[in-house]
Length: 320
Image (cartoon, rainbow, N blue to C red; front, side):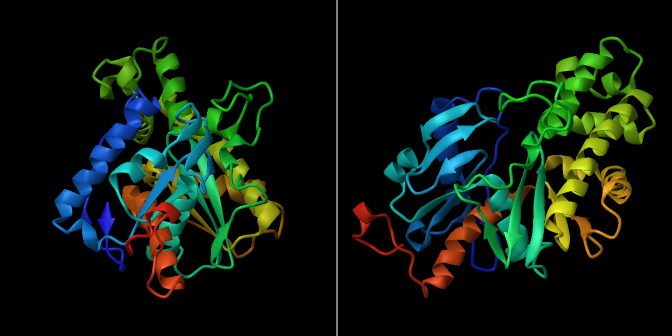
């Protein structure tokens, strides 16, 4: 996206990630999307003060590298180098969960809270912690890896290499994979009908839609995922006592079946009298929240520096 200082979007470009996630495929595609957003906006690129890039995984923001991303199976990848070859401006790399939280903090459901947790329920599961109105990063920048807490030591293998992580049990990808495996033995399930008989086309939305329609198999899969997510959130509440939990990501769009279910599990599982002030809501910025948040890191830097965003050391020949 290309947005102004009020969060208004002027240009937008997107494409499904697909199954091929190698850097040599994703990075050129990303460059095309960036250019598409700029062209769609009709705004001269000289007016752009900077660029924020959100990426899932453990990052080295100072050097623009992806240390490890389980979602993409990347390890030690230079992400910002190729982008900087095309765009002479200040560019910031940030974890996508933190970008999501920043988008909701500046322009969404977190505007009135200085202490909240933003949980990204999508292909994977991640989170970010906002404390005193800013992102809590931890000692080496790996805070918020909510999806990789272990809930079943004998559970399925996670993309991170461990077993029984929340992400392996309840993410959008986990929900889809479980449904794909089960419908083979339950061909009468409405899940398969919604996917036009194509097992490979079943995704989390298909499963939630079938559950809403009363399909027992789908409801069982959804209920189990909600149980795991709720247990994880109850533990988060017991540990950190936030006043707000914001749910984002594609799975969060499932509606009341998800939100009401999570609230009930949390009510049952959180410690008595703990988290008395916490509210659980769905984010306001939808699928654009992460991109908005990534851009907001540039906006934050711009404001805090008094209207000046420095370009990288080797490119100080002009102001972004």
